[in-house]
Image (cartoon, rainbow, N blue to C red; front, side):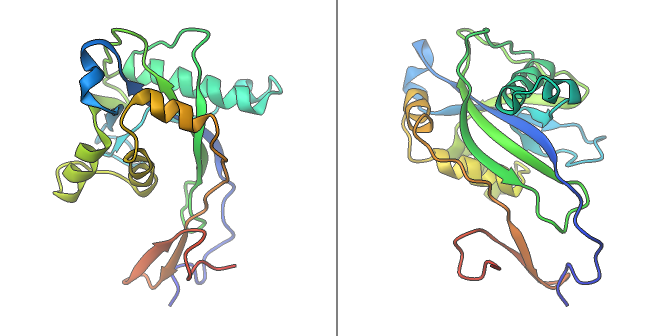
Length: 209
């Protein structure tokens, strides 16, 4: 049986934004690419205990201002400040990196725009202790390795975004690539049965058309 068989119509995904904050410069220059991640509280109803990039749903008043892209950028910056205590300067460059839509089989769905940005000098992230209980600077390689060893809980879109950062040696290189990156929404599909399922992406041979 397909896991979607008998299910109700898919819910409408909520607009959301996430910020992949990159650390570089000074004494950190020799560390390569490092990103800021936070661990969601175990009390959360959605993705408890999972390590994520700072982010959340776009507020209605942000969307009401009429500029959809600006609303998502404002949301990403706001969530970074609320969850990790890092405030970006007014002229900070938030560059689109990817856009992921939650699979239709999920009850809670988001249409999330991921941005990359450079951390302010001497940024000292601090978890809000409400949504996020821990924060850490970590390289994409280390995050993926720790996930494979069962030491860091990650969800599919986070894994895939970390994988896209692997080819780059510096934060500045990531930003330069992002400025010319073409962004298309990615909607994963879930195939198989409730007991034996798999996720496929656009471009995969099995992806439904």
